[in-house]
Length: 450
Image 1: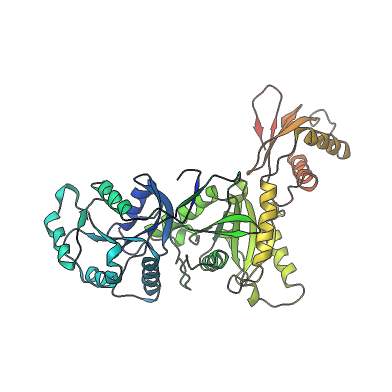
Image 2: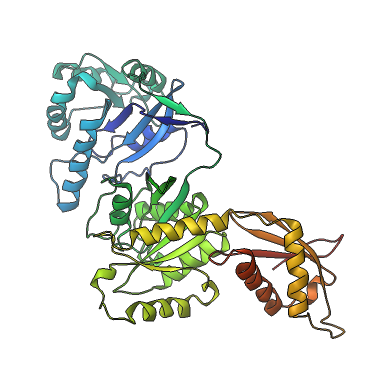
């Protein structure tokens, strides 16, 4: 989509039994790999939504979970969510695979009867005319037309797009030019079953993410949005990240990679930690990745309502976090209950303050006045091999925040002195909650990074 934002877009839902190619078609229509595709049936669980252009017209495209006849507890949630999505969709693209119609297809056709006037039928995997004769048998179920496509190769997908656009009402679509700043992008990361989807649903006041006690329920990155104190937020609910030795399925491998990649798309990370279970090695790795990328991070202690409510319980938990994340003492710790909403306001207020710091710019004059004062208060060493002076500095980027300082002898600037400068930048110039990168350069020579 372009930088223009849209409201009241017509919605198009892709539906059908597992493994008929819904996610492949979603990615083709979106012109990017947004939904996870894999031969394993039932890969998509949560509905995956994205604003896309079909034949140049903007629509909200939804990839739904597969419909099954035989279901377990989680499958029932997926099927239920699929049927809810179909009820609100303006158009349903019902996908079947080329070949014989299966009992699941027939059952799903029955479920589609109430929506018959807003259903298009796409027979997938018909590249090169494969099984095209059998595809026309679907007309016997009362459909006026079927579209023979190949989501993988793109055959006749343009005809399907045109048919979809012709059936949609765009009269209520509104556009708005960008307001100068976009939404605050927040990624929910952490181990499986720490409450990421519960928090996402609470913040967005929706049921976009399926919530289950089964670890690994979320696979795709599920996006949602909401407004708080006149600021827009975009939430990225990700798959739980487990140790590599426990990531056995290809699907989970891709899910974890998508979760890690969400770091690139986010401004702030809510690192979800089960307050009862405590921290894990994976939490440390996620935090380290966020720190290295210059992302804001909030240690979010979920299920706090299950902890003993004694005066020093939180302080002890916060101290534990500080001990395990020694280099991230700047990152705030916030206790919440995603289930009942306790602490959600404090979490969002903290995110607003953090975002203001991530996007803060310091004037060069003020920075250099501060650098001179800091060196007076804590002079650099004066030995023949340790002597140096910081001549001047400049902030070269925000979000992530980076400063370049020019020194007489960059190689002599020790790590303790760099740490001192970082701390003063945080304390004196308003960067108390976020990571900072400092690069030390000599005048007229190649840079050296801290």
